[in-house]
Each structure stands twice: as C-alpha cells, then as structure tokens.
Length: 103
Image (cartoon, rainbow, N blue to C red):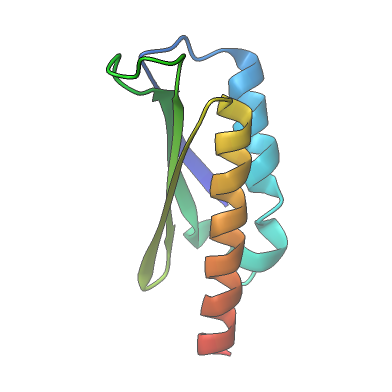
C-alpha cells in the first residue's frame, strides 16, 4: 500500500505521529496484498475545533482507495494514538468484509 499523504490539522505533524500512522497502516498489508501498489491511503490527523470544553479531542481519518472502491474510516478520541488505532481496526473489518464479498 502507498500512503499518498499524511496531513496534520491544528497540530504539528511530528515524526512520532507519522511513524504511528505508518506502523498501524502496515498491519493492513496482509489484507491488501492482492491489490499491491494499487491500494493507496490519504490520512488526516489532528485536533478538532476548540468547541470542546473538557480537554483536547483528537481526530484521525483514513481514505483507503482499493480498485473499485473507497473505504473510509474516522475516529475521535482524547488520545491521538488511540484514534489512529481505532481507524485501523475499522479498516481491518471493512477489508475482511470486502474480501468475503469479492472472494
């Protein structure tokens, strides 16, 4: 899978955040190996707007393009790394469903 871009919104995009995104998305490789480099992802991570009164809320979103379909997952959490992990788990479920449908 190719990661087209990792975008940070309202946060500094550190090397640790990039590494976490790349590491978590790498766990999807066994599920998308059939598409090889035809599978690509656009990732956006960041803080939501300042309307929350009780601490910071982080957001992670991944748009995963596979041949013939776009899979999208997003999550909000008080911990950015948990949001990234939750998005990856959602994509794993979607890829398993897709594999069952396509055979």
